[in-house]
Length: 350
Image 1 (tube, helix red, strand yellow):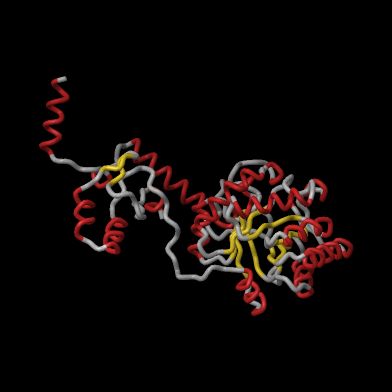
Image 2 (cartoon, helix red, strand yellow):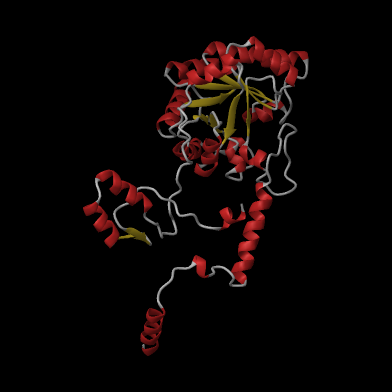
């Protein structure tokens, strides 16, 4: 893994004829002869094989596994079969790329990126413009997964018209297939308007982080009879309003399981037990891509230790640069001794 983190990969994608050096296209004999000798298909294949020497080679999407595009219909089919739906957050092209390669059915650009990608204190700080940029980045990598974008705080509460405009922007500019909106009975008119506009809606009940201040902080919801009924009534309300799915966050497992059985739409749990129709986690959390001492909710299982491996690799790079061990000849471009001698002579005479 260290070599993957430290070395620059040569990505091959269709490029202009010639080789790109520091942003300049320089025609080559190889490409000239290719255009004369090969039919169009072979010419394209040869172009794909060209090495890219630029320091800013574009990142390719993950290798295709010939998976069909995930749609609402295919998600409904999983739900009817009782097969859990997998959802993972992503906030940029690389994090979406790995989700796509892993075969995630859904990718959520959650407003949690405010904290895990932008270093903000909570989700209330992120703006719609920032969400659109991140949605667009994720969507470029998600060839098959169903992509959902979060509607950030302040982008839908003023009016139904504002909410529809926000949803349309996330679809048109962010290239998502659906939107997620937090809240229960109080936002059902908004859900209805967005659905009427032809945009799929994922609801979000239970703990709604955008309303943490009104809830008294990040607290488990549904622990008492009264609050359990509130979560249930919210879930029923968003279902009737037209949401095709709802996230259920920080709710006791037994309560979430009962609610799931009473609904006609899938539930995606996050801290709500394994009785939901599917699960979602914040990618940064489950990968362990954070420094030691960071608080994690009880429900987060750490599946990796990306922070430690990244730190080890970068520290090794620093050490090798300091000792001049890197870059060794195998990571350098060669020329002939004659050219070096002549160049040294000419430069020395100036």
